[in-house]
Amino acid sequence: MEWLRNLIWVLTASGCTLYLGQTWLKAASAERQSVLFCALLALLLITGLASLVLLESSFGWNLSQARQWLDQAARLLGLPLLTLGIYSLSQGGVWAKATWGRWVLGLCLAFELARILNASLGYAQLLAVASAALLLVAAWPWRIGPKLWISLGCAGLVLALPWLNPNAQLWAWLLIGPLAVWLIRHQS
Image (cartoon, rainbow, N blue to C red; front, side, top):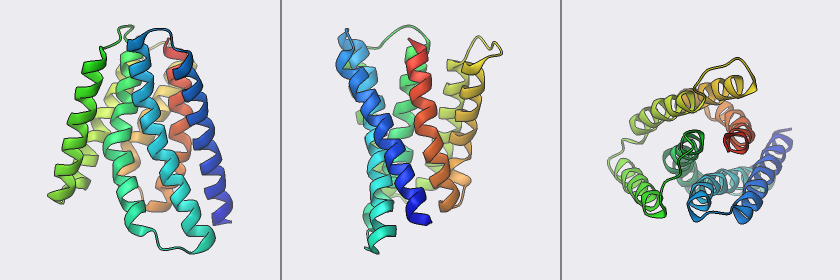
């Protein structure tokens, strides 16, 4: 049954990625395209991770190094980009392409430094707290409704991600993608 869970994860991540890709292609302004591209990059990392997990469980291939790298990239690069995109869209202002480029480069640099210094877990925990806070700020003003509950659910999953065991992380990733896409869709 492990392969079925992984297949569902791949299909869910792929569906979210395709939906966001279509939204990105239809975006009118260049600034909005930048936000959606960064969120799309995050979902592509999650989809790649899901695909590797499926290949490992289905065929017994040893892809542990690639899986570990993609898992770290999804947590340390993709997750902050996704939450920054949701935050940016929720505030109504979109940032310039250069600003998004700086965010991507800065997160890539911090990701590589954390990896080299073996500080990935502490950095992931810090990013999880910051990302959860951004998701809560994105839900402001807090009115009882789907936006608040989905933001709280997504923030809780993001916050718990670094502390979960690998099996539970897969379930968290399975839920984070669709929740994030829903939030992006309803921010604009």
